[in-house]
Amino acid sequence: MIEFEIRSEMNVREWFTANGGKFGYSIVVSQTAFPDYILKDEQGRLYRVEVEYQSFNFVQHKHDPAGCDFILCWHHTSASMLPVLELSTGNMYLPNEEPLNPINDGKKGQAEIERNNKERAKEAIAKIDGLKDEFFTAYINDMRAVSEYQKALYEPRIRLQGVARKTIHALNSNHVRVYSEDPYDLFKYLFS
Image (tube, rainbow, N blue to C red; front, side, top):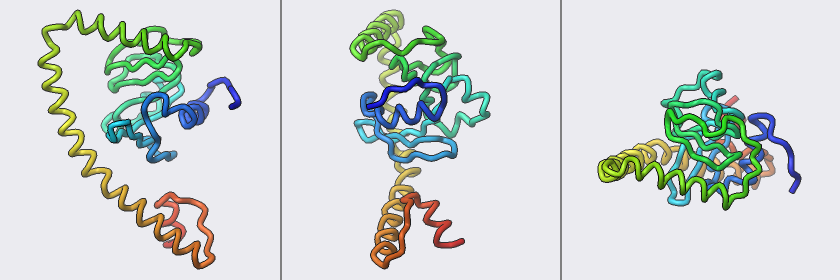
């Protein structure tokens, strides 16, 4: 594997494509339009994710927070309305949480990152011990609602991708070469 310095959003996307599994996510959809990714976690939940080099770019690019579940960035540089996963450190920040180190060299080992996250979580939970039960109930209710929302949102897309694969296979079987599996590219190819 070739190591390279992360200097842009494209570098972040390239790095995440190769390393996203380490964070428990797989890429379901990758696109240039907002949001950049639809990710699936190990429990099968889907997330709309925007990739940025620095988290403050989300606001600079005037993205709509309602169209995104969290921001994936190399450097978390300022508090955000959305959760932020900072890839250089492995830290997940809650909405409106300030970054620990606005710029980090990203050279921490994975074990150290996990240990730091667990320690931070224990400290935070100790401070808000009385809210744990309330949070747990709200979290479960939210997950149920999100699951229903995601199911309604993504089932048509998954069906579209399946039909697109069948259509591409049929075209290729008839010696018509289609080089993109993106349903929207296929639509343009067939109907333009």
